[in-house]
Amino acid sequence: MTTFPFGLTFCRWVRRLLLAAAVVALVAWTVFPFFWILLTSLKQPLDVIATPPKVFFQPTLQNYQAIFIGQKRGLYASARPDFPNFFLNSIIISCGAVGLSFLAGIPASYALARYSFRFKEQLAFLFLSFRFAPFITFLIPLYILFQQLNLYNTYTGLILAYQLISLPFTVWMLRSFFMEIPPEVEDAAKIDGCSWWGVLTKVILPLSVPGIAVTIILGFMFCWNAFNYPLMLAGRQTFPVTVGAIQFISYEQVLWGQMAAASLVAVVPQLILSLFVQKYIVRGLTMGAIR
Amino acid sequence: MLRHPASARQRETLLPYLLLSPGLLLLLGMLYPFFLGVYYSLTNYYLQYPHLFRFIWLRNYLKLLEDPLFSHSLKFTLSYAFVAVVVQVGLGLAVAVLLNSRIIGRGVIRGMMLMPLMMPPVITALMWKIMMASTKAGILNYLLSFLGLGPVNWLGAMNSAIVSIFIIDTWGNLPFVSLILLGGLQSLPTEPYEAARVDGASGWGVFRYITLPLLKPFIILAATFRVMDSLRIFDVIYAATVGGPADATMNLHMRAFFYAFQWYQMGMGMAYAMVLLILVFLASYILMGYWKRAAEQTSL
Image (cartoon, each protein chain N blue to C red):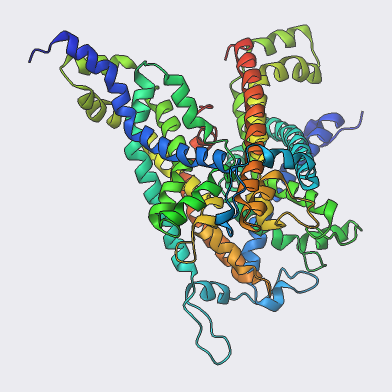
């Protein structure tokens, strides 16, 4: 029998090779789009459309400069770019939505985690069902309502609309974290004379700080990703980055380089924040169904 | 301090509702537009002609049945969801098994898989749109040319646009499926495997008759989430093709959006939206039932 390196049999050698090939393919499939968008964001317009595509070129930061500071067009001084505003809008709306969801969500999820009362499961399911409802079922009536209530193109309106994303998530996520705290801890505090308020603020909340932090971060990230609601309920003054990024596509032209730069900047918060909540992302995406 | 026992008990029963009240208030704020939308679906609401506003019962829904745009969108929505979920769950299972085997840098790869997962779907679509340029300037066509394959008009031709949407969708959501299934694989009990080894079962037999049945609740859960999200996929299609070319990627969600926000037929748009909602809830109801049964069987 022929001998192969590392003393492996032929069959196992082939299996190892296939496994390695699969891993390489998986890594390339996952990483390559990021790599390519980074390259594109550093290219001049002519390099973007060069045939064949260029991997080596004179890198430039002019796309980033254009989206943050503005660029000169001919003789005219350019208008101030919108992108920094879009970024700020994303932060304002996402923070507002998560904050409001927390004020309402902490007592609600505590009640759903600890008390038994009529219609409890139905109510909990009602919150969950918003996770699966198509956006458009809310978008059309909200669009009409917001026009009438002067909430169209306002932060208040968008924060209220974003509750459809952040509130169901917050309630289910916090509920799953609260349920992990053994009830005996609470009973002990109750025997010591704590009211429900004391139990909640002195026992439950301090014990679930990590869970609350995870819920805040993930809720923020999900709001950051929202696209449909702001697409129709926001105007140029309140667009978040997701809607802002497609503004580089117009009838006349597509500003590929600037769009790539804007897209990358738009996901920087996501990539940084996901480092902190790595272990919980799947749990968050399944609304706490998978621990 | 002494409390009257009866009043204390009454407070206990009221308390959960009291705690829920801010959340319920917001919930009602979300349910109000929903029921308003249901009402609009029974009217001929044109945004531009509000004076024509009339309650027309189910006539919008009857019109749907004759609308060729509707049957086209319905067919595309259902077949896309079916194919996407089957392929994505299959691939996700393969990736999960791969990540569960002993490979170098498993933790790093697992962390890397989270990156597409947390991207806004619109940005994902824009990223791929750059790579899917139709000429040879597009990097995907350039890479294909090494395999001797001609330039593909990715987002510009009807069939390839559907495939392109599927590729973009899969890039963003494959990690979701594989990470759920990987979690499932890592939580499996070891006893059945030891018994199988004693019986001298083959690798494939172990996978087919032990791993797959035990993994069933996880597979169904991942499929449930994917079914619901692919039935209502919108962001990716909007950014990549806006439903085109020639309506090839026009699903019910996009069509509802077109009716309401391009043609300002709010009533008709809501009728499309309601059909989609009913589809999503039917699918979730059936799949959740399967999931509960599978979870009970494997006692998870």
